[in-house]
Image 1 (tube, rainbow, N blue to C red):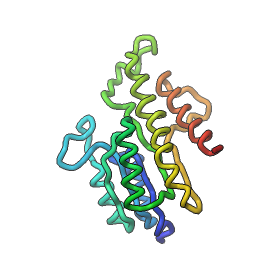
Image 2 (image 1 turned 45 degrees about the vertical axis):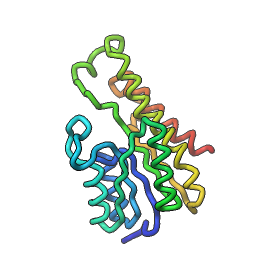
Image 3 (image 1 turned 180 degrees about the vertical axis):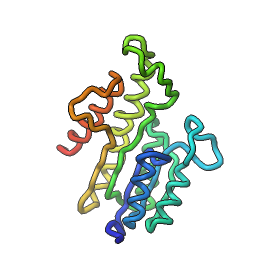
Image 4 (image 1 turned 90 degrees about the horizontal axis):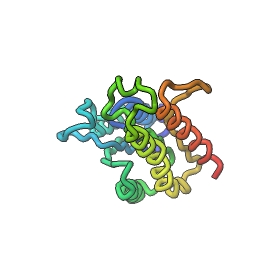
Length: 189
């Protein structure tokens, strides 16, 4: 069933993982699915990981939707503004925004994750907040005006359900709580 035929979606961080899966399902439902990320075919990928936004867009199209790959560095405000302009020009509106941006695992070293927070490098805190909370916020800020034309706009922030439990790492725990709280706050405006 093409329940979302005629709907326009954006899935950020859609090269692989959760974003890739969500974009695929939106394609199956018939949506036009804009997918963003930094990993492109023919170029080096983030941390040399497999999969690209081009593959995700192709999968969304092959599944029944219309996949559109858009390279975007969500930690760069100009890149996010260009993304919003491109969707405005190509689609004229946005119905579904899935904020799945996450660079917190880049340069992952399990030994560093196991250290007490006072021994971990401060760049991890900065990277997680920049590529998690701030990127979700700036992307929402740039794209929400396109959602005013939608009958039933939806913003989904991908986080981690902790059920009030510590997630094992101070930085990770705080940033995931902040992303969840951002979703709650956005729903109030």
